[in-house]
Image 1 (cartoon, rainbow, N blue to C red):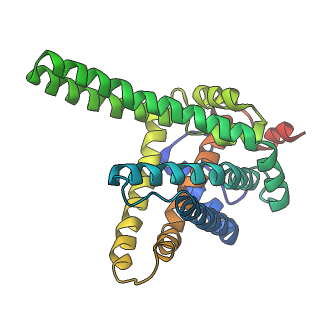
Image 2 (cartoon, helix red, strand yellow):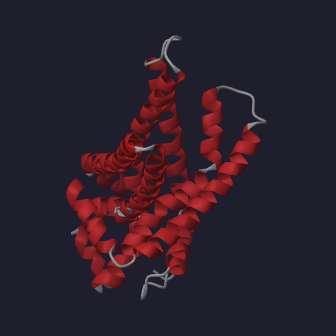
Length: 277
């Protein structure tokens, strides 16, 4: 625990600082897990797209939707396993200063179904957030074009606001699920309870992570134009370039969860070991 600090209060600086410290403790493990998960996800996405290839007569829209579906399925499966393992490693480093990869993989496997179900519940909620406001906006357009435009603008704002609220509210369901061995709904509820009162700071923390991701994405797009090769090769190049910011974003939930346990539940880091018994 000597490398970590600032757990007496929850702040953007302490969380981001400890996240980088965690990553530096075992860079090969964290970067390796993130890169491996990204490459496996890409390979699965390309394989699924080729196995269920669209015919030439299919519309571009159908092809795009299919690509999104296969990409989402592959990402869901891979994230449920690898993100769970990465989270456990990060938490153990914060707790004890050491971590065993074999134990992390076992814990992730044991909670795999719960992680999948929790992710699906989140996806369903986000889907409703996107569909319902859009439906109301289109319904307003039936009344009058002006009212319809205002309804669409209001719907877009409402969609953005509610999406952010729910994303932050459930942002630490993975560590809650993996560390405490909770079921899908319980892990989402646990995340909601722990983040209450600190969601504005958590939102700021993830915004910093997203800014770094967008910065690396811009670099990847620039150099990707200089690469000649297959679609799979381009995807893998993107995965390699985006590994550092994605690793940071993957570590953040574990650090946020750990920090909130200490601050809100008045638990010393050593007493948290009880949850593993």
